[in-house]
Every structure is written in structure tokens, then in C-alpha cells.
Length: 157
Image: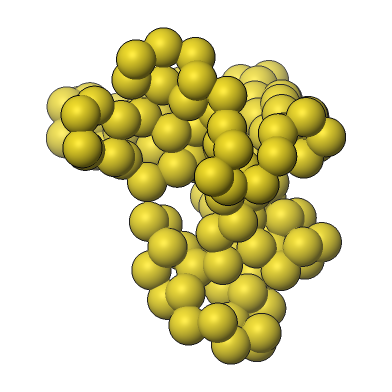
């Protein structure tokens, strides 16, 4: 039953990620345009052709396919892990990471890049733009790390 919750969470993250990205593509103009929300938050349209923070953005058209293939392999591994997970924090973390990974893979396959749109900034400082999938992956990794560092292993039955 709990594993189904992880799968549901992955599907929910995937749905929210794709819906928000479709809305951004429909309503936000490419840079330098954007929608200021607060003094430190803006909604922008950024095409990330690399990995996190634009790493490996070489401009080579094969790179998104290579990154997509790696992400698919990781997603398969996460799904396998989720099917065997027992602890609720691991199940939730895997659901978040899996949903986010699949959301970004869909972007790479459809557009050759990931749609990022949340921009945090203050003064001259800017954090690289990110999306719902990136946020879910980050929260999922934090949950998995927390579990591995602070949860006592279950004793064998």
C-alpha cells in the first residue's frame, strides 16, 4: 500500500511539473522578458540544455539525448528501488525524485532542453532558474539523505 503512495506522488509531481511548464510556454515571453512576482522572485522562460545549473550545456544537439538516456536509466533504477522500499520516508523521497526525473526527461525528448522558470534573485545575485521537477528532486534527495543518516534500520523479522 505504501509503495502505491510513492507511485502516486511520482505521478502527481509529473503532472504538476508538466502543467506548470505548459503554462509557462503559453504565457511567458522568452528572455529578457519575465514576470516579476516579488523583489526576489520572478517567473521567466529559460531553456536548460545541460544538467543542473546548465552543466554540460555544450550546444551539441546530441547532449540532450545522452542526458535523457542517462535519466531514463536512473528512473528505471529508482522505480526498482521504490518497488522494494519499506520505510515511508524512502518511499516519499523516491516518488519525488522519480516524478521529477521523468518530468525533465519528457522535456528533453520533446524540446531538446528542460523548461526552467522560477528565478530567485537579490541585488546582483541570481540563483539558476529551476522548475517543479527540480524542486521535487531536491526535496526527494533530502528525504533520502535524512533517512540514510537519521533513521534506524529495521530489525529483521
